[in-house]
Structures are given as C-alpha cells and as structure tokens.
Image 1 (cartoon, one colour):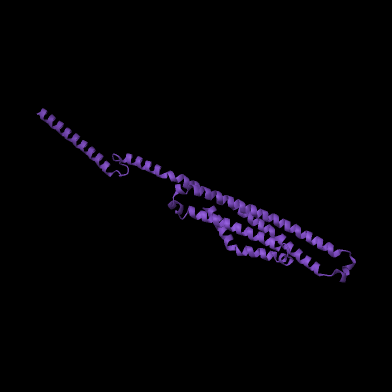
Image 2 (cartoon, helix red, strand yellow):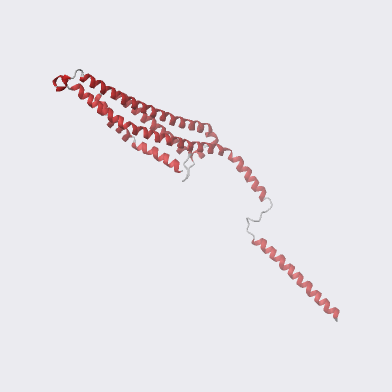
Amino acid sequence: MHVCQNLRVRANLITNVCLIAAIIDLQAILALVSTPSEVIWPLGCHDMTHQNARINASGMSEKPAFVSVQQSLRKSFDAIEPLHEEWNNTLLECNPHLTSLSNLAEQLQACQRVLFKKTPLSSFINLQEHLRFKLQAAMEFNLEILNQKLSTLQRIRDSVSQVVGSVLYMYETSIEKIGLEAILERSSLCPSIADMLEWLQDIEKHYRNQYLQRKLLLQVCGGHLSDIQALPQSWAKLRDAASSKQQHVEDILMDSTMG
C-alpha cells in the first residue's frame, strides 16, 4: 500500500516538473517571438552590413573633393568680407576730399574770372597769381589723396580677383571628381557649389566695374574745372547706379556668414 502511494507521489512530481519545464520553454519561445526584428540578427545580416560599408567606402571617393571645394568657397567669402568693409570705408573717406576739390575748383574758376586790377585788391601785387597758385596746390593735394584711395580700391579689387581665381582653379581641377549632379545639389540650409561660384563671380565683377568707373571719372575730370565742381555728384551717381549690385554683394556675404 505504501509502495503504491510512493509511486503515485513520484509520478505527480515528475508530471509537475515536466509541466514547469514546458512552461519555461514556452516563455522562452514567446520572448524570442516578441523580440523586435532589428534586435534579432539573422545569419548573413552582419555580412550584408559589412558589404554596404564597403560599397559606401568605395562610393565616397568623390566626397573629399566635394568637401574641399565647398570649404574653399566658404573660406573665400570669409576672406572677401573684410575686403568689402575696407572698400566701403575707403569710399567714405573719399567724400570729404571730393567736396574740398569741388569747392577749390569753384574758387579757382572765380579767381580766374575776376579782374583784380578793377577791385580794391589791385594794390596787392601778384595777389591773383598767389591765390591761383595756392588753390591749384590745394587741388593737387586732394587729387593726390583721391588717387591714393583709388590705389586702395585697386588693391582690394585685385585681392578679390585673386581669391575668386584660386577657388575657380580648384573647382576646375576637381570638377571631374565631384560630378555635375553634386555641383548643382542644394538644400534649404546649404547653397550649391554652382550657386556659390556664381556669387563669387558677381562680387568680382562688381568691384572690377566700380573701380574702372571711378578711375575713369577722376581721369576725365582732372583738367576741367566745371567737371571737378560736379565731381561729388558724379561720384554719387556711380554709387546710386550700382546700389542694387552693392546690396546684392552684401546679401551674399551676409547669407554666407549666417550659413
């Protein structure tokens, strides 16, 4: 009787152990099924990852050239910004000398028209010649300063041309590595290489034209008193005529700085 009871107890224990083992196995299976797919790595997935990495690595041979040209373009805008500020300051420094030159030309013209012999000043010997000499000397002094300012504008123009030329050379030597599609690619945060190259050429053209126009203006006005008197107005007309292009340059430099 006791033997039968012991056998039943052992049978129940074995049954319970089997049930517990089955439950544990079931929980393990459910855990595996519920695991997110990205955590479970099937056989060969790691090999595919390495293969993609190799493909990306081989496909990125053009990227260094693209990044290099893009960085050079941004550095060129950084280099032009202080030159642009110096250009504007130089133009402002010209204004008082233009005004002085205009006033002196008006005084010299009046001095040449007046007959001193018919005025109370006739008692002063050679007064008219002395006044003419001093007025001409003062005009030459202001013209010399303006020519110095013009030399500064020429230096700035040449510096801008050098910056733009260096970037264009780098672009031309890298264009085959970059590819046309990458050159034209732009985003809301970053302009394309083609855009930035066009901006640089616009800036260079602006400085080149402005310098030549001011140089010609000073050369033409040098020997005519009436033209020298109108020099401040003529100088301002050049500024007003190029105001839209000047604003375009400033917008480009501001956008490149913010970008």
